[in-house]
Length: 368
Image 1 (spheres, rainbow, N blue to C red):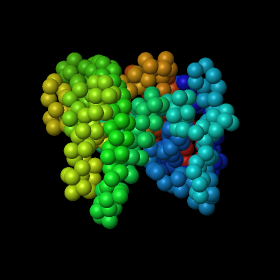
Image 2: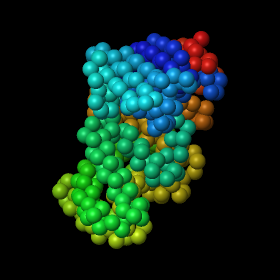
Image 3: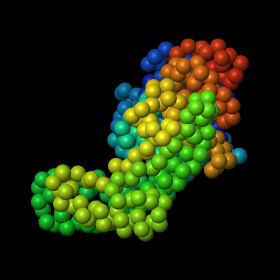
Image 4: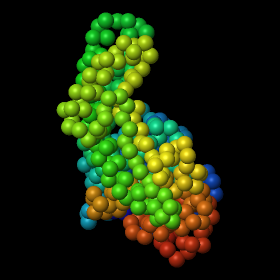
């Protein structure tokens, strides 16, 4: 799986840009604020159908323009694909694969899978639960198209229910309150699917991440991941019917409390990953170096899991991550990406890469 060419028109600070890429390592250099991260963002859009940096389409479109275009030539599953995405200021984005409309983001991720590693991800261990949920969701939406559908439907029901609970007028309106049980049924059904997918994903991720962490720590530390559900789900791998029943029962019990709190109090939107090292809570007890080693292990394991499930390595995007790592961890991560295509952004031409892959220098959205 690799990106052979990308063409950008009026995307961020790229007016008219095109580049052909090396099948292995691609080093993107340049000073800060020249467009290195914007280029990786465009690749992510080809994979996910949307930007991980903003929900505002206008942010992606160059000032003074009404649309932005991204075109990528992809080699995947021994076939050639052309993905095209158009972002507009006044209507929804349009995407196509080989000139056939792509109705869902999953249609894109089935062709191009990506793993992004950026400096913020080094805080994956110590950050709030929302960051770890997003880590699971981003991975699973690419791995399992059905998961993306369940997540979208769950979020839609959650937003609608939250609006009723937050709005005082709707909160007191019996007609609106009467639909809360229906929303709870939707949340329970889709929530059960989300929980089961996450539990299975973490179980497989654990196997790879533990090995990476053990190696990087010199065999001194054992990493363990455990899915923590909110509420009454003690076994996240139970049957879908059982989890649905338990979720719906809990949500029904919480209706008075949720009306008082004006928010949804339980469900997979509150879940977390408990990460331990040698049986100690990593969030509370890990040093900065240990936390960074664990974050490295999770990201490398995510990439490895994609390979085991699809037979192809996803495109790995390292956005200025090497400058944040000490020499030992930098060497560790580079030694683990000998296969598959990788894009690495950095401010200077690294001597370590002079004879590996291609080096591109970006200045103000222009390839020099």
